[in-house]
Amino acid sequence: MTNLAVVGGGVIGLSVAWRAACTGRRVTLYDPEPVRGGASWLAGGMLAPVTEAWPGEEDVLRLGEESLNRWPGFARDLRKEGVDPGLAGHGTLVVAFDSADAGYLDILAGHLHSLGRAAERLTGREAKRLEPGIGSVRSGLHVPGDLAVDNRKLLDALYAACVNHQVRFVRERVEELPDAEAVVLAAGAWTGRLHPRLAGAVRPLKGEILRLKPRRGCLPPPSHTVRAVVEGRPIYLVPRGDQELVLGATQYEAGFDQAVTARGVRELLEGAERVFPAITEYELTETAAGLRAGSRDALPYLGALDGGVFAATGHHRNGLLMAPVTADAVVAWLEGDEPPEGTAAASPARLHQKEPV
Image (cartoon, rainbow, N blue to C red; front, top):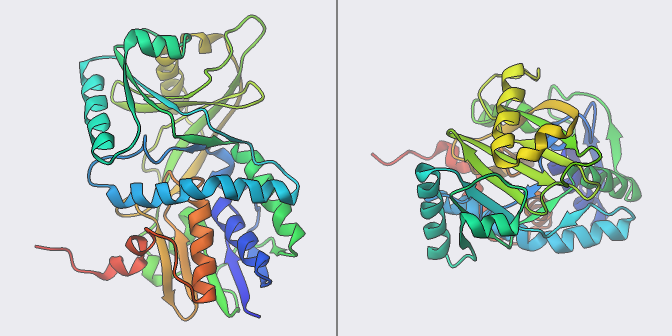
């Protein structure tokens, strides 16, 4: 049976290791701190390919929706392993504060409607009825099909599932490719250091994230994921089942620096106060910064590199969303089967294609 080495213990690596081990393969996962050591532990948990969609990124949307369709079965299989990953179907509300924001929503709504996706334009009053705690907004866009997952419950569930299927964990940082019949590179922002074809193609994108909880007498968190652009900066608020609220969306180039900055925290809190004023009375329980794995074109790199080595990296802001389709693609490659719809566009072979003049 094929020996498989998976490099990286975040949501992608754990998902690949679990799904591959379910086929009877002997799987070894390499990561100095699986589960808690990477960007997946700090993610917002949005599974929202529709709300993230933008003209020119149709391949990203197609792959994201393919994975979203696989999420209910993925979560159901994890629950059978003994841990609930906390999948929720509360949808997304995108709000606009001024005419420029409203114009953005018009473009997004038009794009989604042209693709046949469900999205309902709302007046400011209608948005406020849907989420009474939001601030004074000009208009909104309700996308009911978006899901969310508790990223930490998910990672714990994946780790337990890997243990159930005898995945071997080597808690070391990999400097060169492990000796195995097949190797999957899923080390997030660090993957570019592991293979020459990915050097310079995967880069770290830093983002701060905050976690808050309402104190006694405060309004509860919103019931939907709420997204907005405040003074040109995107922001999201994702509710958790235990009354926790996850706040994020800062993103910038800072190399491998993972320090939390005062500016990043200030920008998030100022933006969140515009969106959901009651947040100023919440208890701030955690501040952290993580490194997403960015690609050159917002699509991940999924596919063969050479000699039994496969890329599963560069998921940018969609690591949690695309975990099911990525894991299923890896199993298909190993089995010699046809991979899922949408994965062909994400092949790393595009790195060496000439751009049209």
